[in-house]
Amino acid sequence: MADTLSPASPLTHVTPLLPELAARAAEMEAVRRLPADLAQKLAEAGVFRMVSPAAFGGLELSPREIVETTEAIAAANASAGWCAMIAATTALNAAYMAPEYAAEIYADPMTITGGVFAPMGRAVVEGDHYRVTGRWQWGSGSANCTWLCGGCTVWENGEMLRLPSGAPDARMMVFAASEAILHDTWHVMGLKGTGSGDIEVKDILVPRGRSVSLVADAPREAGALYKFPAFGLLALGVSAVALGNARGALDAFRDLATVKKSQGSAKTLAERQTMQAEFARCEAQWRAARAYLFAEIDRVWAIAKGEGAIPVGARADLRLACTHMTRTGADICRTLYDLGGGAALFEASDLQRRFRDAHAITQHIVTAPSTLELTGRVLFGLPTDAGMI
Image 1 (spheres, rainbow, N blue to C red):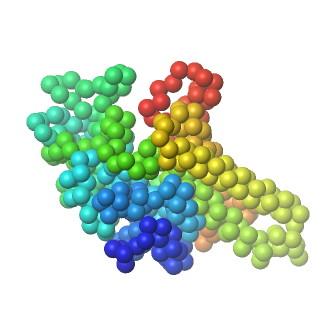
Image 2 (cartoon, rainbow, N blue to C red):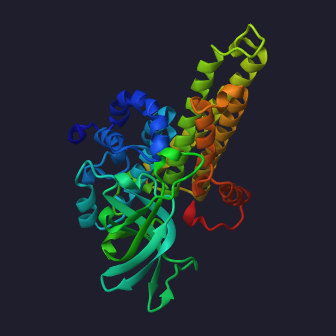
Image 3 (cartoon, helix red, strand yellow):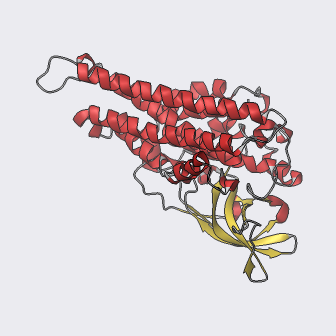
């Protein structure tokens, strides 16, 4: 099936998997990772090829399609949605690296890649290679990957190289998963099923052509998806998981409220006016944040498909919509957890898992509160380093 997917088919192919993803949420939390058989099924559905270039067998979907697919997976199981998002967005590297290396990695439609952007490693220039050593936290889904990447500062002749802006020259080094050590460090509150332990490499050689900078390099692929802001695309992935997770919480509360009665009451929660009003308010918040997110996606995508550059203001607005969706999703999950009362406390309740997952999602740097400061500077017209917008 993986070789014959139509360009718009991942959501169609992943839909039959959603009940299984939902049913296995507790199992994923217990093993603290995405089980290999589920990773295989998601790969067959094309989920991990949403962002990779068509030139290398990828689907090269529009940002709207990527978000809709990720949203659907996360509505069933936020940890599965997170793993799908990380693997899909990591494949953005293929648009930037030398074509021969991109083809080596992505020609196999079942390839799963992952990694960490943060420059926690050190890459020393050594001829046509970098000698790389590093350890990275947050390696989501890495146990299922065949290739991994880790951000590194670049060093030559004992000095750290810098960009013209003065910022460190940080590049992602892409290496075979067999060269890495995976450390079981993932003992956390939320997104427990993502297997986001540490990745480590020691003194490995990475060809220069298999390294990528989303800041300093220009994409080699000409498609509109690769003109779309790279960090905006990463932020969209995070906010898509928040979007789906909040939808799952809304659905879980509706199911609970139609059958649960408070102690001493003959009415279900759904029959109580305060619950009706609060649930309606949460639904409105979700719909409004989703509409805002997709409005900014469509606006920036229309620019990306044209000839001109994407203005900093439009890129900042996209990031703002992503952060807003992520924070709103957490607020919704917190409210619904409260409304669920004592029943929401039990591990059998989706509401407690949605609450925990929502607040884990808010910790990602691309939608963290600091992004509000960055976009606020742009809104005020202040001088801003736009490299990460």
